[in-house]
Length: 419
Length: 196
Ligand SMILES: Cc1cc2nc3c(=O)[nH]c(=O)nc-3n(C[C@H](O)[C@H](O)[C@H](O)COP(=O)(O)OP(=O)(O)OC[C@H]3O[C@@H](n4cnc5c(N)ncnc54)[C@H](O)[C@@H]3O)c2cc1C
Ligand code: SF4
Ligand code: SF4
Ligand code: SF4
Ligand code: SF4
Image (cartoon, helix red, strand yellow):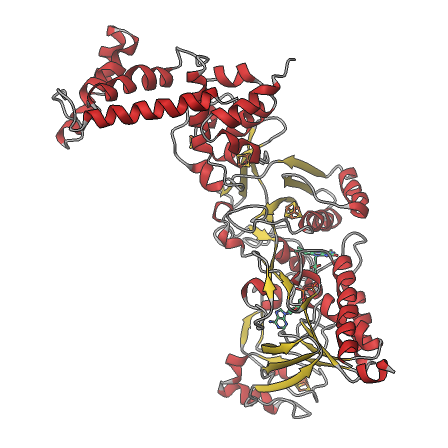
């Protein structure tokens, strides 16, 4: 039977976000071996950073949890964290890949007891929360993180203090002298699922992100509203910790704009509607204004848009603002033209959230290291290897999962042909 | 309300850079960026929409496009890379060639009656004469008053040699070539105008 042969083949999945996780479990549960390579210390990707999911406003952790369980229970899946693919050669059915596994400085014996973190006195800006708070130099990202093993910052590992911290581990899991290893594998198919990163808002000069404390971005806002975030979920202004009750969302900040990202990211309109609900739920007397060119809430998401429209505490301004200034009280003032009336406005807010778009990792730091691969002008992967989720196009979780399942099918096809 | 559906087509084909108006997505960034907006009746965005809606008279008779200072604020921010400044000047020129521009619009009067005559006569701008003609545009009384108001600036410019008090006489070197260039430009413009 072809199956018996093919099942011996391995499928490489690069990127452990919701797309990569989906491709991995779908292919493995069909009987194929999967090697999942993730560059971060934990799996989950951007979804692990979201506070709630639109349109149901449920917690994203439950969806991830199910996938983690499926991975734990499936011996066909091997996963590597803190790892990156350096080179791919060969062709479909017969690739050779070289993977670099960076040191975690903590072994898989770690029980997640947290003793080391308690002892460690060195703190660093928390990348998981976009540097909005400090965390210990040895830690895990949050209680639900998978794998739950702690990890140590490479810079800290070089210090004397790291050795002291290592002694605190009851199971001897900490190894500050751990080194990177190189792994070579033969695989039948490669699925690229490296997802996206938030577009760098500092590039949008007229909006003053990085210059004005109370101008933030949508991904930072996800963390700000989250219980594991820098304020334990309290929505406050970064400048003075005051409750942020008058909040503006600026759509297409750095998107659909030839000066920045020319394409539409498809999810940021819905993300702002969801985030408007965070504000409205936390403060019943809050006022939210959404500045937009036009709203993208396709097919089944229309109902979510309607629900947002029904909330009298949310108002809409059809306008892409020209710029943001700061007044004497540290309030960001949004300036532009109301395109429905032609009037100019200059409106102060407690907090302004820039709805920035998604830049594919494959455009910047995860280009496909394979001569046969092709990417479009924006960096999305178009051929040479299979591409799932936001590595292929900007999209929401439901469509990412669909595309990831489709790529599992295609990968299996390649493995069967080979077998 | 009457819509002139041929107007947009005319602008796309005959006004310089006019075809770019098709690309406008009506976001409003130009309007919010224009430092002169308070003095315009319609923002660039509105003008572009009026072109598309066929409002021939409102657009061509408007004083708006004569007020652009070419600061380029709008151009650098337009998400769709419309050359807004140049479109605005193209609309002004188109209004002029159509004989629709308001003859009393001050910037138009300066551009067409003063500046153009001044530069084409000799091939270069005669600053002293240009200033005189501008100041005395509205009569002798108004001219003297403006002259007095601007006296300090004028003296400052004289001192730093930014203003040449001696009127430029004669013609620039290669004046023939200069007039040929202008004739060629006029010919091209006429060709555009004759295009169906
Ligand atoms: C503000 C905001 C809010 C959103 N809210 C929602 C929502 O409520 N509901 C919804 O459906 N969608 C939402 N989305 C969209 C959602 O985030 C994406 O659909 C989803 O993240 C796509 O998953 P992915 O696995 O394709 O990519 P990612 O989540 O980006 O995962 C990619 C993974 O690949 C890893 N990786 C990157 N480079 C490499 C490399 N070189 N080697 C190995 N691994 C690598 C990354 O570390 C990451 O773990 C939102 C988007 C934004 C911007
Ligand atoms: S590394 Fe050791 S001390 Fe730290 S959490 Fe893991 S088991 Fe506990
Ligand atoms: S989804 Fe909305 S905010 Fe995001 S780029 Fe598209 S239109 Fe703009
Ligand atoms: S900024 Fe550009 S796209 Fe936006 S309204 Fe002005 S001309 Fe149109
Ligand atoms: S170039 Fe003209 S239209 Fe553009 S912002 Fe400046 S004055 Fe306004």
